[in-house]
Image 1 (cartoon, rainbow over the protein chains, first blue to last red):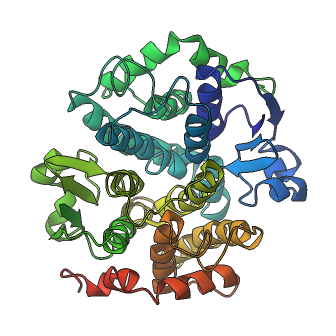
Image 2 (image 1 turned 90 degrees about the vertical axis):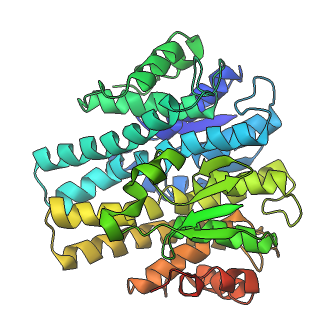
Length: 214
Length: 214
């Protein structure tokens, strides 16, 4: 397998954790989102991933995009170390938690959106950073409430083994800290993030531990 | 089952199509996103859905949020009229198409984001509408490329029966038209949208056909 990613991409980070937890070896192919006007926009990369986004997983000749779709694919084809619960209600909860990050939080703060704010809307750096923190507050606030109010929350987001929800939580927390967001309102999220940080699979997936880290 | 939704919410619209395609009856509970300062923000609604977003599906006492998680849950518990292909690669493709809308397009243009642009960043109505059209162009451009370049695309996004990808495409197209986006660059999307529009399940789910339509 080959994973096309960028060390700081949250979505690639999620997939790296999944691959590590499942003990799957893969070749990492860096795609620099800033160099050359964005290498993800090249014709070569678009041939692989028409959406021009990272990550892309290539498995046996098939190129797959979208981190959550990739992780579900890995879970179906390599079911050892499952990343979703066995019951339908549990899976719905875990997918809902993952999507609270992947659909409601991360998309508002990714690189292309920040660029649009700065270059097209010409907002100040302060206003851009305030935007970032606002959507982290809203998104992580929702996630915190979902986690804190449920008996299903354990050492990790759902029970005592990592699921796809944790794979989304950890990169989002990493980004929030990088942008100086105040995390004190999210104690459950911080506790789970710390528990994940004790697992080598999560550590090995961290941006600074990737070959293209700067 | 009860579906808490808002007639114009894309995410609720997706779930309505799923319920209709599967022939499941449900009670529709309107949550007005603009009245009373946003009924989704009330304590009553937050008790059901801590993220304070629509839709929420209540099934047998369990309250589920996030449209894609709800649809997967319905597909697992009511597998007649499946909304995902039978093979892992096909499922990955369909989920990827759905997420191209649900993660990369819709989140940038939902109501709370447009409100932030207007009230906090104080951008003009023109700039706000330009923002809307920009992310529709980017998002539907990616979706069009993914669909046009694949032999798996049929009458619908994946083959000749509707999948969760179509359930995301149709509400996104509805919104794009409402905001006056130019659709001429997306012929495959328009063709699939028209095919969906011939099915009563899709028609019955349209915003203007809901009890809370204005």
